[in-house]
Amino acid sequence: MNVFDTHLHLPSPNPAGVEAFNCMIEAYPGFQGGLLILNTPVGVEAILAQHARLDPRILLVPFFDPENPWDGILGRSKWVKIHPTYLDLGPDGLQCLIAALDRQRPVGVVVHHFPWGPDLRKPSGLEWIVRIAKTLPWLTVLATHGGGYESWALRAHAGPLPNVHFDFSCALHYYEGSDLLRPLIHYFRHSPERVHFGSDWPDAPPGSQLKECLRLGSEAGLDAHQVESLLLRNANRLWPMAFPGTGAP
Image (cartoon, rainbow, N blue to C red; front, side, top):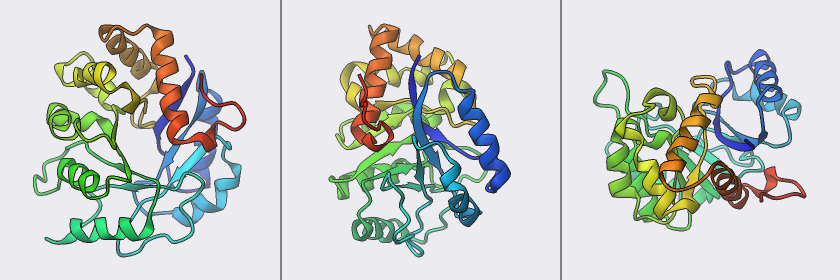
């Protein structure tokens, strides 16, 4: 199955991590391109220095900090990553972050939404996704991991927002076969143009997650070819620069 992977990471933020990433891409069956997402600013200089060694179908999505925006280095994708767990924002922090996005004007933003860990004070991402999408309707928001155990809440509150897109990276692996993945069936049926495949490699394997994605697509009435075409078409629409001269079917 040909695939555009919207959620990839480096094993380590240094040249060795870039080398391991390149080896993984070479061995990735059907790989058509993907997003290399930087969750934090750690090691960004090393990554940028190695960027020329990456496959041209790989688009860099840097970490976004409203207090230290990366002017001029958004990369070809013009997307940024927001990770609520790593951004220690005060009471008015989300408002400031939205204002910074409005000033910087990226094309899209990837927002982490996989509640995890014992620190319940950390935000889950749901409020961030909804408020960003409602305040900046021109901005495409990719909600990651299907929302984790909040997958149904994510669908209930963000599903009606047309500028919110969804991937189930890692969740397809961690919650395989569970009811928490069933919102993907509803997305396939009712908002198929907003569904994407992401693996969250190296934290989760792409292959088994693709199988789970196809299984859920089948429950939505789509065969493997339809799921493949749908996902590639959606990726081509948001990141055409990763499909040079060809486009998606």
